[in-house]
Each structure stands twice: as C-alpha cells, then as structure tokens.
Image 1 (tube, rainbow, N blue to C red):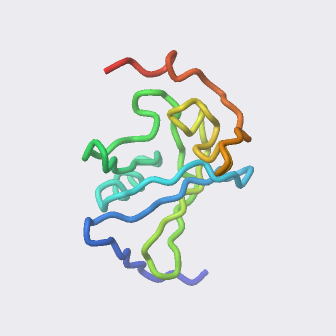
Image 2: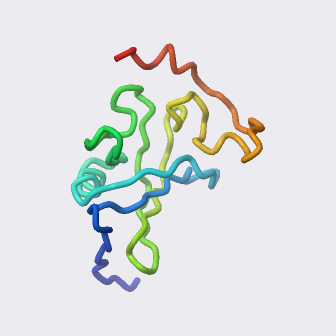
Length: 125
C-alpha cells in the first residue's frame, strides 16, 4: 500500500470542513469544521472532535449527549481542504434529535428519523 504524507490546506480561519459519514450504512450524518488541534485530538482519541464557530471552542462529539462518533477512518480529499470522517455513530448525530443533520428537504419535508428527544439530553444553559 502506497503511503505519502498528506498536507492539510486549512483556510484563512485555520478551519477545514469535515463530513461525518456512517461507516456501515454510508449515510451522511453531519458537516462540521475542524482545526489542526481537533484533528490531532481525533487521531489521538479515536473519537470525533470538531471546532464550533458559534461558540469559538473545540468540542468532542457526544461530550454532553453521550452520542459519540468513533472514528473508523479519516480520509482527505484530493486538494487537502476537506476531511471525511467514517464513523460508528452512537445515538443520533444531530443535536435536534435526528439520526442525521440532513433530516429534511429544502421544501421542509421531514425525511429523517428522530431517535432521541433533545429536551431529555441537553440541559438548558
């Protein structure tokens, strides 16, 4: 198997988009952003870490909900400017309680499955 060092092309905010995909079903679960530190923590721990642009902080998926993403493999696109996390998802991926963040069409039709009640999982902060 050929191995080469991969250089990641972070944007001017030092971020890369990362798509989380269920390693078994192939379902796209979510899109989030990562920093170099988030990638390092993901690789070191085997659990998905992301960077919240709205909260300006690093976070581990499932840190408050318990709905973690165990990394099966991390892939890099041809330009080095996007990542694909192939994951084993525990619980729902979306903070709204749905299995995937992509649970509705552009017309607003709900096409995904809600797998938990967010009111039962997240504390009002």
